[in-house]
Amino acid sequence: MFDEATRKILHACPREALDESLFSTSPIITRYPDTILSRHDVPYSAALTFNAGVVKTDDRYIMIFRNDYGSFEEEKIIGTNLGLAFSDDGIKWKVEPEPCFAMADDEVLRVYDPRITVLEDRYIICFAVDTKHGVRGGIAETKDLKHFEVLSMSVPENRNMVLFPEKINGNYVRLERPMPVYGRDGMKFDIFLSESPDLVYWGKSRLVMGVEHVPFANEKIGPGAPPIKTDKGWIMLFHAVDFDPARGKNGWEPTWKKRYTIGVALLDLKDPSKVIGMYKRPLMIPEGYYELEQGYRTNALFPCAALVDEGNVVRIYYSAGDAIIRMATCDLDELIGLCTEPL
Ligand code: BMA
Image (tube, rainbow, N blue to C red):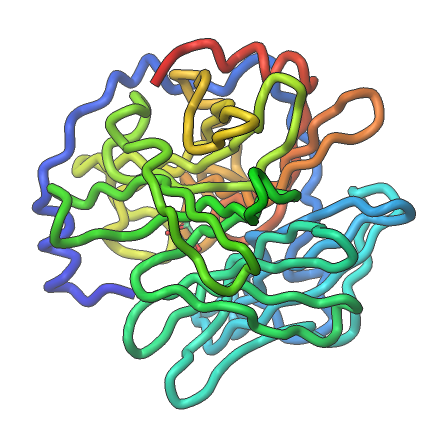
């Protein structure tokens, strides 16, 4: 992570104070009471098991999760791989005996934060890649969840890529979150969209939503789950980060002063770079022991998957404290009904 000097610079950037009364979880949300997956469920070395892509196919649920290994008790991470799990009900998971994917060579340090989209006859995995020359967004495809072919890698600094589940106006479309440290005041990072004819070459990039549009963020926002198609528009779940210098130690990091919440917006079906409605309050904020007190970074919710299940129930899979995977549900129409305000 950042060294002490960098941390001081980051903490010196001014951020607007936010209205704390905005911060509550929407009443439409129901949290599943138990943890969905943690290091205790993983049959190989695992310390932090979190940030999971999840999809539902005809006969099962599939999860690819980030697995940082080392020692949870000693607060030490020595490497990261991606694990694979299957479930019949989306709640009880069985993790495969070996990790399914990792990348590390002279240049690439690690792959993390997978999101899955089922596209045509294959699974497309978007992930972040730490390299010696910056953070890049990677896209890989797999048909059997065993062999992965990397299709594209963005230039630095970019991550939090999520792919739409179908072509729009003839092109594949992804949401992404570049990290412009020179051209944008203070650490402000926003959500963009790009298009591609083949998942390899990406362009036509445009802004979707800026931090300034989100009253509960004063630092950065980023795509969360691959968007869900509805007849009213694409549902975009995102994470939103607020920084408060008055916060003390947060998890394993001595001076981390952020909170990660979850937001929701609706994007235009034909031009998903247009936000047609958003909820100006968080959909979920960290609450309770697992979300506020335990983990690598306490006070952090990070959604990487959402799907619509029987009965119009939306399942949101999110990480708590960068340490475990949890799930919350809500009604699809109620979720759409929150997205009423313009940008
Ligand atoms: C982001 C990434 C994620 C992490 C999240 C919350 O910046 O590092 O991997 O889950 O912060 O700490």
